[in-house]
Image 1: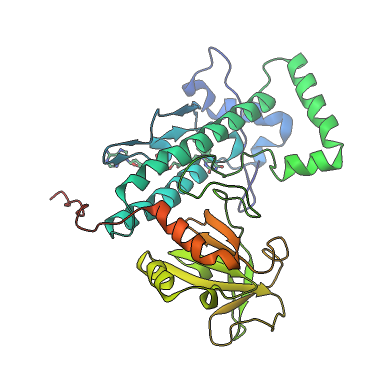
Image 2: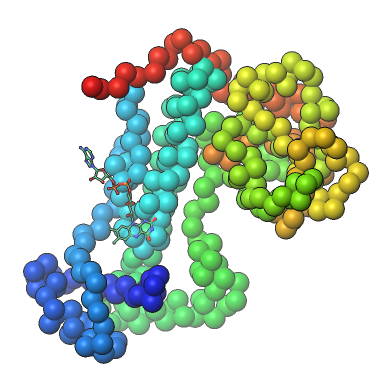
Length: 322
Ligand SMILES: Cc1cc2nc3c(=O)[nH]c(=O)nc-3n(C[C@H](O)[C@H](O)[C@H](O)COP(=O)(O)OP(=O)(O)OC[C@H]3O[C@@H](n4cnc5c(N)ncnc54)[C@H](O)[C@@H]3O)c2cc1C
């Protein structure tokens, strides 16, 4: 594998009877590398014997305890998704904890962490196991067949793109969880994409930075504020929500003059999302609810309803251990 800084990473599967002590010796490493280059011209920076595991806990939560990262799931590294899965856990869990502690959502939402994250972590581990089987055949016949099949599949351009872009990776899209169920233009329980946006003053930023750490009510093309009652705007603000307008590149018509409207510079949102659509987006960028702007009052009401009533007094912040 090519690594940063002109480095390379080489991996060799241990066979039965081969020991850590033997495999980490200079002469053994030189013998392993000899068929592939000039070991005397290589500088070995690190050597390590790993045992790969594929394990997931039965539940990511028990009472007040939440498991995240490798404590909850360990994957063989073949899909390169071990740390990434941990980051997804953190993104999913942290805002929920914050929202409950701030009294913006009911403690019941915390159960959605396990419901949403465990199936995806499991699916990613299954993919890593599958990929491991492809790259670690244990005899020449199996190697010939699997590598031959991969070569054939990669000869078909759409399949090659599928493999090269890791299109076989399970999508981070929830079947069940903290969103308003139903079929729509956007995939509720799926992620809002990220794209480059430009402000009225010409500032260019990534949409994740624009949306910030709160809930976002995003109006595509139109400004949702002008379609919302003041009660709904207040409820949204009380739940940590902000309104953002994302419009077509160069769109002038309908663009809120004074409000912070952003242009979709690289078509990341429009025209895939219909003009005049709104989406209520969670802090982890999962789509909570969506629909046409005419229904925005209901969308806010139903979306906030999923979070349940918050109660700052019911959940005191945990005391720090001295
Ligand atoms: C060979 C290999 C290649 C990999 N390649 C990739 C890759 O390409 N992409 C990718 O996304 N992931 C990859 N990973 C996986 C990635 O390294 C891990 O998933 C990630 O480091 C896990 O992070 P974590 O914070 O959950 O756990 P850890 O990194 O294990 O962090 C846990 C920390 O808690 C500390 N700790 C433990 N017990 C206690 C205690 N009682 N009190 C206080 N501290 C404690 C530990 O010392 C440690 O520092 C790879 C892993 C390996 C082994």
